[in-house]
Image (tube, rainbow, N blue to C red; front, side, top):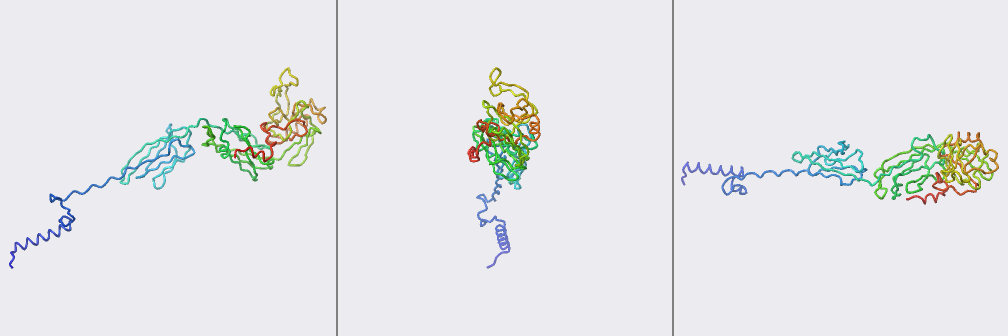
Length: 398
């Protein structure tokens, strides 16, 4: 059959167009790419990247818990947290730029502004502003220490550690858990509550001479019950000096002085008269003054009543808050060594009083026996050593 050159050329052109159409995806065989109008459809636009979402710490945050800022569906470029004064809170952004965590100190009852610059997956920048609130306690309890930090160079073997709060503590266990004591050499010890505002720490026996003591009160952020939180963290360090112990015997009217267990001196004394007997048991020296004015009215015997006195007394070492001291008593030298005539104090001749004042100090011990008086009360600075170790442990909240 004869085919004209014109027809042959047309056939070749159509075949070439079909091949090119397949290659370009425009042939009807290319998955119906042509529209009903015979035209190629427009390409679908790319879906936008998700907008980053910023999450911050829950409200009513305890200030001991760091503020955390988390970014999902994107990353954080910068995070700035500021207090109401505009002061920035330090923090660290994780290497993956998804989480920022505060490292700076936070405060109670504060609203912090959180500003976050973000970046989506497609590099679109964004910004978010949030706030974080910290808890606002009903009251903040401050932990005072006795002895106060740096108030004395060293203490005696009888010195208990005392923590006094300026608000009542209803969750005593929480308070005890926030108190830690370390000693070198290591010694056992425990806490006992004297009242709702005061807790003491002591070992089973007197401290070992030379002991280094560290008391830490990690109270900030601690829920102490009834809306009261600890106001601050504090640390106390103490060093225990030689074991100075005086043994005052009302039967012999003598006081023996021991230094690290060795008898070094014996003194003539006069203890409380039968109407004012000295308390028995271990007493701990809590104060030391060259002279004070002693007034019996401070414990209820006032002017015009039998036994009233008010006079200046020298070389005074307080051994209880019930008006008991070791002091110089020149007026009773004639009775010292043979009868008890004081109002509860340990009376010494001036020379002996000076020696005692020079050698004894805060935390040293005066043990009184055979005075005819009752035991020193636990609450009477310091009756701590009147309790047996099991009874002491029973006064703990833990």
